[in-house]
Image 1 (cartoon, rainbow, N blue to C red):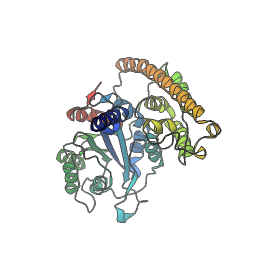
Image 2 (tube, rainbow, N blue to C red):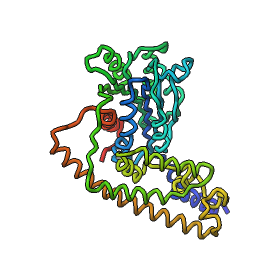
Image 3 (tube, rainbow, N blue to C red):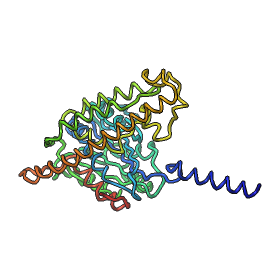
Image 4 (cartoon, rainbow, N blue to C red):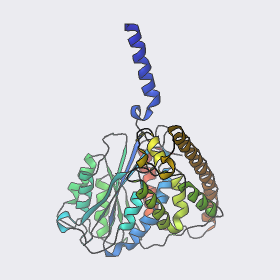
Amino acid sequence: MKKLTIILFTTALTLSIFCFPTAAFAKAKIQIAILLDSSNSMDGLIDQTRNQLWQIVNFLTKVTKDGEVPELQVALYHYGNDSLPSEEGFVRLLTGFTPELDVVSEKLFSIKTNGGQEYAGWVIRSAMQQLNWSKDPADFRVIFIAGNEPFDQGPIVWTQSVNLAVKGDTLVNTIYCGSAESQERQLWASGATVAKGSHFNINQNQAIVVIKSPFDDQISTFNTKLNQTYIPYGREGKVGQQRQAVEDSNAGRNLVMRGLSKASEYYDNASWDLLDALENGRVTIESLSNDALPEVMRSMALAEKRAYVAAKKAERESIKKTIRELSQKRNEYVEQQRKASANKGENTVDSVIIQSLRQQLAAKGFKLQ
């Protein structure tokens, strides 16, 4: 009996390791908190961030840690807006850390500039105290704060807020949206120095050049086909599916870049898409009532449901593979066009975020393919 017990325990342990690898070996995390000044003069900053979110995500698809694609979580604040309560420092958390990038995009498009009083120290403190930062020292934690008013504005001393980040092993990168010669920029640079981050100066009103390629129409077509592989479930199903369509529309001329992001492992919609929820172990088909499923699945037997899900998964993987292949061709074409162009571009919010991530992720042991 004792020998049989040992064998059964060993078998169970082996199954737990091989059947549930995510529980035994958690993926490394990349946590990015974006803090945007939303006062009257910052329309250009907000627009750049909205339009180039997918460019930043596509850069991160090239990053691995221990041979795996990390888990990406993004949080978003806006601050310095007179429409926000003064007793809360004119600061608003739009979303805590989430892997669902459509939510981040939706919240970016919800920002309306107005005002105001821009308390950098307050919003950094809020981000450090309110967000669910990883405690694992191997994970990557970073704040990007952008604005154009004095960094020491407001009742919260900026050094105290930045030191909270230092204690939390969280980098703070500062982006000053104003004249490079401005004296106000010096404190923004000091904030980054104290927090062991990087400081940048950008023109928030700089127009971003989008280079079209011969592959863009195909990518857009496959993006539409990709949407058709999503299976809405539960209370969030219809909302999530509608959000996906709205954010496709919001992407505008950047739909191609968004489509490339959607073909990556970072595009996770487990709160409303059945395939992602099953992949993440969030639900099982058996556990869902027919009412929680889309109408097309409600009359199916269990075996039919499984077959339907398997077919959608295979279709999705095929479409993603095609988009990635087209992406490679597009990247080669765009790079050739850039080299031939006399306009090498200027610092915009996406370029400085990517520049800092490239250096800081490498320093943390992440690898760029």
